[in-house]
Image (cartoon, rainbow, N blue to C red):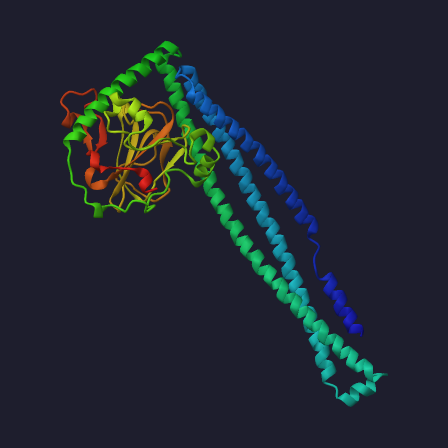
Length: 437
């Protein structure tokens, strides 16, 4: 029975003690989670303040404060993501320790089983007479053989059980690695947001220079924008009313096909769900498509045609993502021309499925005409350019066969912005974005 004692001792001490390391990792993860919760609380406060500022009467002070709040909020977003990435790395270390421990356990069990099999083979190599003669009692022969067989069966069952655990842990490790890659991509997105806010800071500086930090100059600028925008919209609608085209229904996807993704990151859309009480929906939508209350109340601008896209509330510098792979049909900036306030900085993408998507009021554009983009690529950043009541994305969807980019001076003899280029389409080419998101 001495070899059984040796096998049992080997079995017990072959398992490394990693509990201390794992407990330390768990404590670090818990600490990171506490930090994340605190920063997310700060983000919620920033977002609430942004909502309050956005609802206030437009003033130079409120415009500056909104930009500053956006920068603070996005900096906090970056800190949250960095903590989440650190947590993912700690989780991977914890899983690695667990997997290593179980691998050692399995190795120890297999070694113990091998030793027990050698002893059984050794015992079975003797004849029954030899075994009886070597033992003082006949019962010792049967007891020892029975114990070996039971021990072997128990070890085999244990190995099978721990192997299942090992498979599960390997799956957890794969999942954690995918999560780390996702978080790394998210960190890149947030770094892009930070870049976008740097652009917004330059716009803030330009605004201060333009108004010489005087409220009266800012209000004058707003009035000029409103007047110019109204004139531009009238010109545009008159032009689009003249355009007529029969849209082939078979040339575009079916309504409800979900062919387009939301034009923001998954993390941005997740947080929209947390702001339902502010927006009245879980998508950060501030104005829907068609004859919305705002469009109806501002008939002088919309002329009864309704809102031609969907507006999303997004602080200046928020990365805007391509809703589908395609080609950049064109870009523009109506603010380049004095008295021409409309879309501001815009990008038009043409997709292979017969749809085109427009992104307007951007603070910065990061693509160029003719460039191919993939679904989810950052094409620019949310802003407040053109005529806008606050930082947001104006997202429009067209039937591609009906939309074209024109130079206003080529089609309108008398206009405030003859050199501005802008997408135009007949009324029937405008599609409700929510039908395809």
